[in-house]
Picture 1 (cartoon, rainbow, N blue to C red):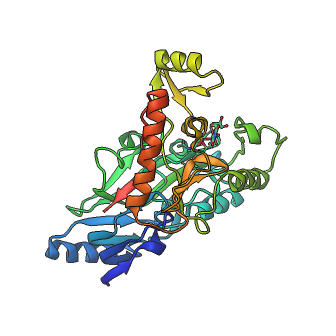
Picture 2: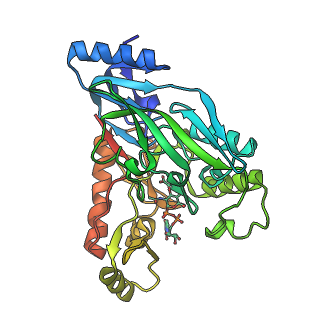
Length: 334
Ligand code: EPU
């Protein structure tokens, strides 16, 4: 069923004032095809929204906005050591992390409490506390929004890298991910390399999830109480020479190896040290979070233009000081 002029403010965690020209909730392939047929008759653009935790919505989103509510879960096969499961893309991510771990299917514990849906997870290759989701994604099933073609993207077709995949790059906005196939080990081998997790001694899966939730709650604002879209910028990757120069000029700057002679910087540190942590625009209220400068909050639920204007000031301040350009993480919607 097509809904006209749907208020999208409650449909994205940044809560920007926004309205969709037309929208449809899709719970099955049949509903999806029906909605696409409607859009084809109208000749209008089609966009997909999950829980809206990584988007910045325009004040008026033209065409058809699909709200993905495709659920369902199916064990495909089991070996002695792993289980392979197809998971509906509209399922809440944190629910899936807790459910899988409670079944004795492990690996996703470090990714607890990340907002959003299962279908959004491979798009930006979500990652936290030493784990990236791609390590457990066997394939992604998607439907082409223009041609209606159904396609399986094997792991190698997804072009996963840090906060990136084919669904963010070359094939952006072309596919609706319908199901994600995970392959998870029965054996629990916790990744405890990240600072605040190092103190855990032989944690249970549940203990690890609880600790991850605690760390996140300390550093990151709850998006349903304080509008935000998580990390607003990706951590910049620079070459070794630039990292060396920065370390000389700014002793103490965190630099992490990123492979192939490249280095990753901490965007939160750059913003913090440039004096922008906990700062906000007096008029719009848009600002950085006092516990994590990489998160931009929008307490007054202002339109996206105010958020982007504030972000631009941060980008300029960081570029002036470090000659590094920060790239925005959440994608523009509409
Ligand atoms: N830092 C500061 N000041 C700040 C924030 C960070 O000095 O205000 C320093 C920290 O002390 C640390 C470094 O910067 O030395 C990195 O900070 P942190 O460990 O908090 O992680 P991050 O690089 O800022 C990334 C992800 C997060 C993920 C954490 C933990 C990106 C863009 N963000 O943040 O993901 O939870 O690592 O693994 O890669 C998200 O994508 O929305 C997200 C929250």
